[in-house]
Amino acid sequence: MGSRYIGIQWHKVLMLQGEDRHAWEVIWEGPLGTVAVIGIATKDAPLQCHGYVALLGSDDQSWGWNLVDNHLLHNGDAQGNYPLLNNAPKYQVGERIRVILDCDDNTLSFEKNYEFLGVAFRGLPDKKLYPTVSAVYGNTEVSMVYLGPPLDG
Image 1 (cartoon, rainbow, N blue to C red):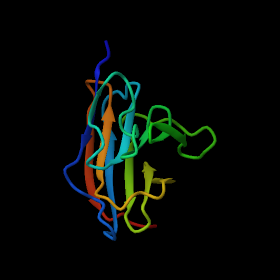
Image 2 (image 1 turned 60 degrees about the horizontal axis):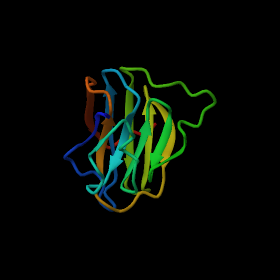
Image 3 (image 1 turned 30 degrees about the vertical axis):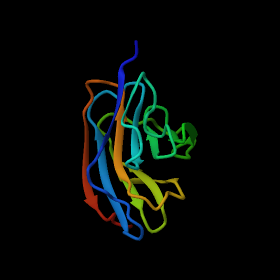
Image 4 (image 1 turned 90 degrees about the vertical axis):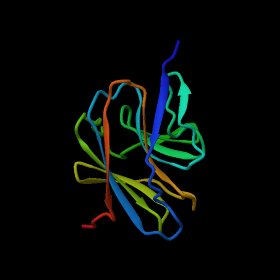
C-alpha cells in the first residue's frame, strides 16, 4: 500500500503575461525522501495522488526539478539532468535554492547557494503559474519565501 504524495501550491499567482520577473527561495529543512521536487504549476495541476511518484512534473500543467536525482520533470517524463554540469552535486538539506520565473522570456531558472545554475525550462505558457513543491516524505519541512524581482549580477 502506497502513501499519499502531496503537492503544495502557494496562493500567490506569479505569472501573468508581461508581468516581469519573480524570485522565491526554497529551503528543504527535513529529509528529502525519494522524491523532492520544486517548481511551478498551473491551477489545473493535480495536488494529490497515491504512491511514491513525482507529482510535480507529472503532466503538462507543471514543471519541476527533483532535488533527489537532479532530473527536470514535465509532462510525465524526465527532461534531462539539471544542472548541466559534469558530476553535478546533489542537493544537501538546508541549502538555499532560489527559483527565478521570468515572465517576459517565459523561462524558469534556479540558483543554489547564490550560484546561477542556468535556465531549466523554456517556453512556459502565458497562464497563471504558482510556486509549487512536492514531497513523499511525511516528516519533512519546506520553507518558501517570496523575494520579489531577482537581482541581476
